Image 1 (spheres, rainbow, N blue to C red):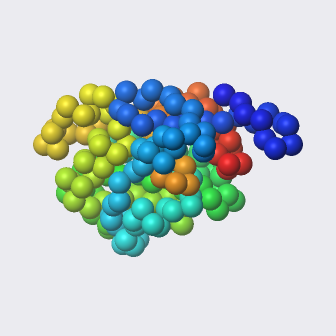
Image 2 (cartoon, one colour; image 1 turned 45 degrees about the horizontal axis):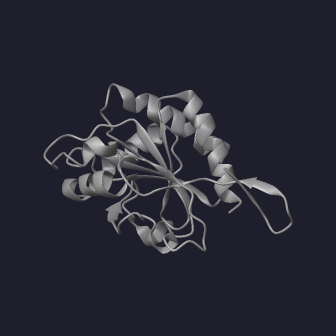
Length: 200
């Protein structure tokens, strides 16, 4: 969708996603529902350096969120390789972060994630690998990020979380896009969308 800026030029805008069925909604700042747009719930998890990362750590930042585990032999290696492309593309962009939540935090300790990051040249200043309590991560994934879409709303925290989704979160912790992190074409698409958000 495009909007006119004050100078009369048209600019692309991204929708908001307020539910797990990922219905795109374009909501202007003057709309009554603007203040009710879905936002990511507060959280407190540790990254690969042992630093506590909260929603306030990411305030005013655009970030890409995904879910993985370090010993995953299937979709995770491809996802993380594609996210590494984003790290390299936006290496000089201070307002773009990557945030990967471990879905096996009982295995992925801070030390494990630190080694994992070092082996893959993950820049901890730009890319957080997060671990913490399983119930906190699973609830956040399914209820806030809608990581497994509508299906995830029907699952309990006892059911394993495994998804190829990556989500684009804006500076106000709102979902602006969902993509398949295993698909190169979606890496190209999210790159374009990040550039749109950086102009907001």
